[in-house]
Structure formats: C-alpha cells, structure tokens
Length: 193
Image 1 (tube, one colour):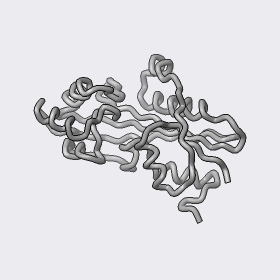
Image 2: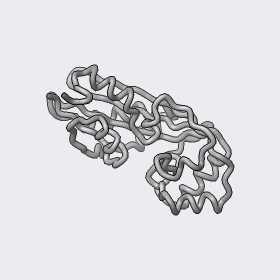
Image 3: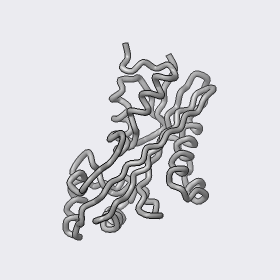
Image 4: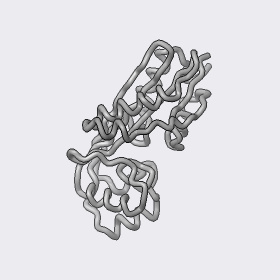
C-alpha cells in the first residue's frame, strides 16, 4: 500500500480526510506562500498552484502520495485569506455582509509519476449583518483561522442566505467527493476492505 501524507497543519482538513477511513500521516509543508500570492492574481489558479507547491514540498520518497490543499474567499476581485485576528475577521465579515462571494478550494495529489489538481467553487450569499451581530458571532466561533472569517460547520451557517456547491466538504477545506474518486483512481480502497 502506498504511503499517504496530508501536507497540511489544518485540523479541519485532517478531520475531513479521516472521514475516508484511510491511514495517513500529517506533515506541515512550510511552503512560503507569499511568492505565489504576489505573482498570481486569479484566485482559482492561485489555489491550484499553492496546493501543488505544498504537496511537492513534502514529497520526498518513492511510493509516497501527498495531498496539498488551499482555499481562499473571493469577493469581487478581492482575495481574502485567513484573517489572523478578531479585528481583521470583523472587517472581512462586514465586507461580506449582504453580498455574494465565493470559496475557492483546490487540492493536489502528487505521486511518483502523476500530479492531479482539482478545484471546487462554492457560491455563498451572506445576510445583511450589523456590527453587533458580527461581534457576537466572532465570540461564538473565533474564526480567525478560516478564509472568509466564518465556520459554516458551526454557528457561521446562521450568517448565510444561500450556499451553492457540488460538495459541502469543500467549504471546510477539502472536497472529499472528488478527492475520494481520485484516490480510488490511483489505487486506494475507499472505504478500506
């Protein structure tokens, strides 16, 4: 059996991948994202290239299969990453209030003789929110480590008017439907026998 590695320190992606029932290791890529972020303006291409770079940075031995992933929130032409602080999270949520935006989530699977890259695009519309609602929400979920500054798997769902996606797991950071199909295609058994 091939050795599977998730190139991410995200507890959300780890929990998602565990749902497939596979044995895998976790290794933070340590890839410096700032280089690609300064070069690539298209959010889909950015997440695809970052996913691939993260996976490639971990791949070191024959037989390893490495999964890298990246996600951004996009409002108009603005790419929003993880806010990193409550103040930035509040600013992001106030910008998103009453507007439709997108979560772009890509993953890359890198093996000895293949590289697979896929992207999921989720459309979301946030309800009109006032500053007090935003502040109260932030105390509930503390979403400073999430693109868009909300956690839909928790109380963030209450902020939304609608969500359109082909795979709801993409919202949390790893589109499991396509990922499972691709892993089966390269020889993994899901669910395991």
